[in-house]
Image (cartoon, rainbow, N blue to C red; front, side, top):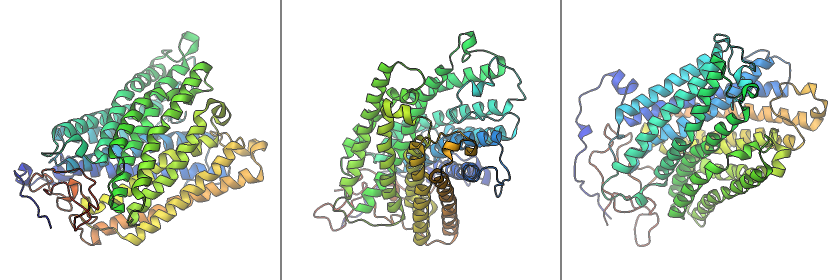
Length: 570
C-alpha cells in the first residue's frame, strides 16, 4: 500500500497569533469562514423566499381567505411577494449558495492553496453582499416596494409614464435596484478572486486538466457572469434615473423604448441560468464519481462542452421575447441557438449516466440528491426545448407551463445539487457526520413536495392558466374543477416541501453539536480537500500537497484500494 509523501514546505498560516472573536468569525479573511457566512446567509434567505411562496400559493388555492401566519393578502402585497420571491431565490439564494459559498469553501482546498489570492478583498465581497441583503429587506418595508415582477420590466417598474417623481413614495423600489447592484458588485469582486486563485495558486504538479470538475465549473460560471452583467447594470442605472429624475430611457413618448430593458435584462438573465447551473453540475459530478467508485466519464468532454455552453449562453436571450415584437426571422435564429445550447448539457447528462453504468453505487444522502438532480433537471431541459421553439412559445408564453419549466430547470440546481453538496462536504467543513436517516427523510419529502407543486402546473399551463393573476375566481374559464384541484395539490406540495426542511435544519444543527466526529476522508475520495483535517485548520494544509494525477482515479486495476488520492506518488 502506498504511503503519504512528505511534502516540500510548511504552510505559513499554521503559525499565527490567536485572533479575536470578531476577526475570526465576523470580519474574517479566512475563505472557509467567508464561505460559511455566504452559506448561512443564503440558507436564511431560503426561508424568507419560501415564506413568500407559501403565502401566495395559499392565496391561489384558497383566494380571499385568511392565510395562517399572515392574514388576508391584497393584490399589492401579492405582487410584491411574487417579485421578492423570484429576486431572493435567484440572487440571494442560488448565487450565494452555489457560487459564493461553495466557491470559497472548495476552490482553495481543491487546488491545494492556503487561502484565496486576495483574502481582504474576499472579506469585502461578503460584507458588500451582506449590505445588499439589508438593503433588499428594507426595500420590502419602506414605501413603494418593487412589485413589477422579479424581471422589473418598465413601465411597471418605472412608476408609469409620464414620470411622476415621488422619491420617498417609491423609495422601496429604488432600494431594490440598489440592492441588486450591490449584490452584483459583491460577486464581481468574488469572481476576480476565484479566477486569480485558480490560475496562480494551484498545488505543484496540478495542471489545468488535473483540477476537479467543480473548480472548472466555478470558473466558467464566473467568466459568464462577468461578461454578461455589464448591460444589466447599465440598464438598472437608466431605470433608476427614470424613477428618480424623470428621464425617459424607457418612455416611448420621449423616444425611449421599454423593450430595451428586456434586452438588457435577458442578455444577463439567460447566462445567469448557467452561472447557477454550472457549479451545481460540477458538484453533482463529484458526488456521482465518488459514490459510484468510477472515473468521471468524459471529463475533458464535459469541460469543453461547458465552455461552449458559456459562449452559446450569450446568443439565446431573445427566446424570452418571442411575443415582444422581434423580427420573426430573428425568432428563427434564437430558436436554433436555444436548441443548440441543449447539446452541451446532454453531454453532461450522458457522461453522468455512463459513470453510473455498472458502478458500485452507494445510495447515501448526497448520492440520492445527486440522482434526484439528474431526474428532475432532465424534465426542465426537455420542456425547455419545447419553449425554445417560437411557435410553441407563443402559445405557452407567460402561462404556468413556463413557471413549471423554469422551476424544473432551477430548483434541481439549487435544492438537489446544493443539498447534495452540503451533505457531501458537511463532514469535511463541520468536522462531524450528519444523521443518515434524517438526510434520507429530507430527500424523499423534498422530492415528493417539489413534484407535487410543479407537475400539476404543466397541465394548468397547457389549459391556459396565465401567471401573475391574483384571484382566479374572476376568470370563470380558469376555475374548472381540474384546474382548481391542481392549485390545491400544488399548495399541499408546497406545504410538504416547506415541512421537509425541518429534518434538514434539525440534522445540521444537532449533528454539528453531537454528530460522530468525521475522518479526514470519510468518502475515500481523491481530491485535495480530503487530505487535510476535518474541519481544515487555518491555512488548510499542514504541508502543501503535490499532485501526481487527476482527481477521478477510482477502481484502478492492480490497486488494492479503489481510490488513488491526487497527492500520493506513483
